[in-house]
Image (cartoon, rainbow, N blue to C red; front, top):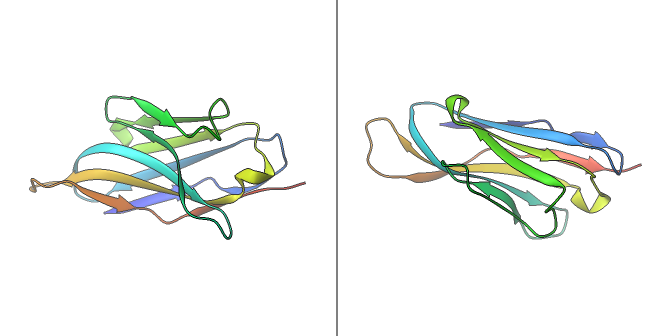
Length: 120
């Protein structure tokens, strides 16, 4: 199983970025998909999550600025980030709770991080 995250980069304050994370490799079904971030010297925190049915939850720190969505046909989760602030600078990682083909158990898998830097 591979979760490939991309879309990070350098952006000025007030700018926007769209992250994506695509899951692949013998997947039967995906339940929850989530975005986390870890800023330098800080603990990892959950940014946003979305269920297979489309229910979402977003951290207070990004509510109204970040939007999570997913494309179940593509096994992909997105994070649209608007009105970015320097405090949003962090490595953003995705995870997914999924079941592999031929298996009955669900497991959480993590993708590699993508760096978002908000700076003028």
